[in-house]
Image (cartoon, rainbow, N blue to C red; front, top):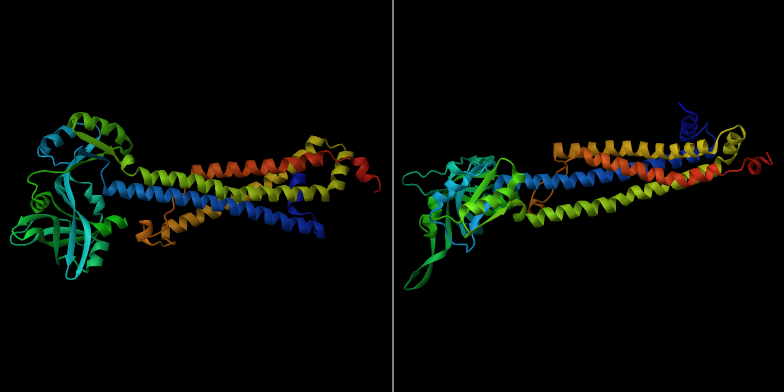
Length: 411
C-alpha cells in the first residue's frame, strides 16, 4: 500500500476514537449513505424503465404483428391468397396471416361490452400461440362443430366482466346491419366460448375476442375478403426493411407499417421518461457529491496540523493532494458498491416475486417489471465516481496549499 492510500484509509476509518474523529466518521457514513441512496435509486429507476419497455415490447410483439400490410383506401382484399404467396417469399418472414377485424358489441344476459372481434386462420397464424400462451380454461381450437354455435376465444378480463366461462354462449352484434322495411336492423349471431386466455396485457384481455376468419367474413357479410396481412419476422428489428419489400411486392395500393411505427408514441414516451428519470434522480448523486465536498473541507480544516507535519517531514504537495482525492474516491466507491448491490437486489426480488403490484387497467401490466441492465450499472458507477473525483479536487488542492510554518508556529 502506498503512503497516500495508507493515510487516506486512516482518515476514512476515523482515527483512534477522538471526539472530533468520531464526528467525522459519522459524517463519512452519511456521505457514503447518500451516494448509495442515489446510486440505488438510479439503478431501480432505469431497471423499471427497461422492464416496462421489455414487457411492452414482448407482449405487444407476441400479440400483434411485426409488420401490418393494408390497402391505402382501407377496403377489403379479395385476392388475398395471391398476396400471401408473394409475401412469403420475403427473406426473414416466418408467417403471413390474413385477418379481418371489426368493432362489435358482445353481450351475455344484461352485461354488454364493446370489443374488437378478429377473425384469424389459426393454421396460418402461429403467432397466436404467444397471445394465447396461458389458457385459463378451455381450448384454443376454433374449428366449428356441427349444430353448435360458432367458436370464440375471449380474454380473461373480458370473460370476467361478462361473467362467462368456457362452454357458455354469448351474443355478438355487428353495427353493419341489414336494411329492412322497418329501418336498419343490426346483425347478430350467437357464439360459444371455447376458451379463455390471459395474454398478460390488459388491453387484449379486456377488449379482444377471436374466431375463425370464415365466421367473421360471414358475420360482416364481406364475402371472401380480408382487411389486413400480418407478417411475423425472425428478426423483429428488420421490420422497416421488410415493410419496404412488402409494399413493393404487394403493389402500389398497399401500405406496410412496421411495429416501431404502430407503437411509436409508446416507445418514444418510454425513451423520454428514461432520459428525464436519469437526469432528475441523478441529482441525488450530485447532492451526494456535495456531501463529499463538505466532508473533505471539514477534514482538511481538522487535519491541517497533520498535513503541516507531513509536509515538514518531506511529503510532497502532490502526495497530500492525492491523499484527499483518494479519500473522496473511497467514499464514492464504497457508496457506489453499496448502492449497486442494493439496487440490483431490490430489482431481482421485485421481478422474481412480482413484489410491487399495479392496477393493470391503468398501467397495462399487473406488477412493476424490472430489467436490470449491467451496462446501466457501469454507466451509473462511472458517473458516481466522476462526481466524487470532481468533489474531492477543491479540498485536495486546498490541503496541498497548507503552509507548515503558519500552522506549526505556536505548536
